[in-house]
Length: 128
Image (cartoon, one colour):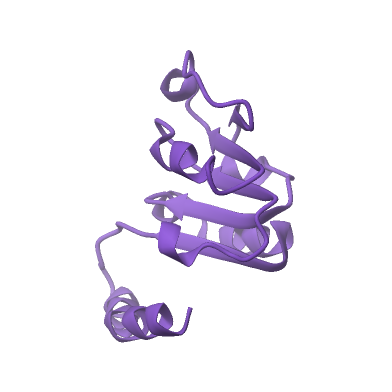
């Protein structure tokens, strides 16, 4: 993910940040970083750098605009269409959405999507 950051680096938003590992890595690359998780137990008492804050919230309730929005092993927990529309609404022009999914393919459509990604992801990596 860190190799695919956008040029604009004012604000990064990690939806479903969990124990904040990615948030910590992003703090050296962005002016401000917000990590969001719906489970307060995961992010309570976590010390973060000055340019970082952690919020307890549902991912689809967040209203902050950002140059980078990440979903690391989170998208399969959300309603796909509304999650992607929400991310598109929050993303600043020229911003980037980075997602890593971990859901197992279950339907023919899931398998088609997985096969397409096997081909597309390396190509996307070459052009970014």
